[in-house]
Amino acid sequence: MSAASDCVICRGEDGDHELDRVEVWREGGWRLTMARHGPTLGFAYLEPIRHIPYLADLDGDEAASLGAVLGRASATLRDASGAQLTYAYVFGGGVPHLHFHLAPNIPEGVLNTSLIEGRVEERKLPSGATEIISLDHPDLPPEELAAVIDRVRERLSE
Ligand SMILES: [Zn+2]
Image (cartoon, rainbow, N blue to C red):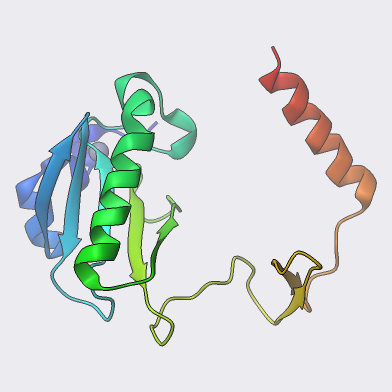
């Protein structure tokens, strides 16, 4: 687990200055900051005030309040920026302090909607949903996928 003392996000306002962003809201153990530069209107970061490294480490009061905080922040960013919806991305490889990238999206905007690197193809399902298919990476063997599905189901039912 990474140390809070080395963490730019735990440095609060000083870290915000380095990251060129400004805090706009605190609620339920979370803070919302907004980028002061970049190509996306209303780009923001929702992060726990307490040092929680990754999404898989989320627990306690922050876990209990996340839904309400995430929903309110996303709706406010959407409405204030005139977007149709707000995308949420969580990675963790760059800064090991959990943060949701909240990005209001407009159709002609710059946001990448692909979860898969490389060439992809969109296929419309009967429901109207869009499935994204990788053209560079073949599907994994169904048995391998099924084994992980089973493990997750078992562990979550314990
Ligand atoms: Zn931190």
